[in-house]
Length: 113
Length: 115
View 1: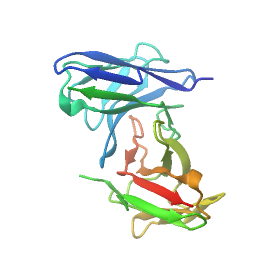
View 2: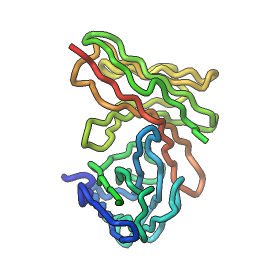
View 3: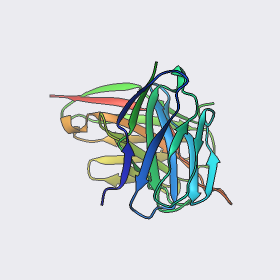
View 4: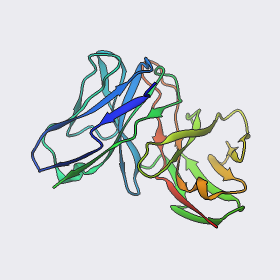
């Protein structure tokens, strides 16, 4: 049981490049979400999904896209990377929309130069 | 607007001492208050959580104290150990009809337990 798997662990992008951060969970969790972690800012919600085919915006969605075609996968796409998107990104999942026990992945450290 | 305010930003405690981290919230609709523990290079992991119908919850050396009238809650780590050195996040959430219950996190406290 792998839990929540994020790839890659590290990534360096040039300004303007696009990329996709992958997130997969094997716990059959309905709810998945993406957070970014910045020093002194805590974790801020980017996008979330309550089930396959359903996504919604969080607190800081600009510059990011998501889709949820399967229960297991919830990729985060950076459309045109900017230095302000330099951060550590965490994917989290929970059993359903009302479950509070989140399982986090180990994160992707992204640097945009 | 910071809905959950956490302090201190960093904390140094001697081994065997008590670590105390405080959080304050603004939204009285919050009904779930978890604490997450994060080690370097890892994702946050749920440590302990409380609902507002109780004033205290204890799990081993970790205790949450909750003051509903003051809109404050705190994490106490008794007999702190070097292995407790990590970053701790408080969070809050509330149930919402028709959509997901989303966690709002505090800014984190970096705890260092010295020998």
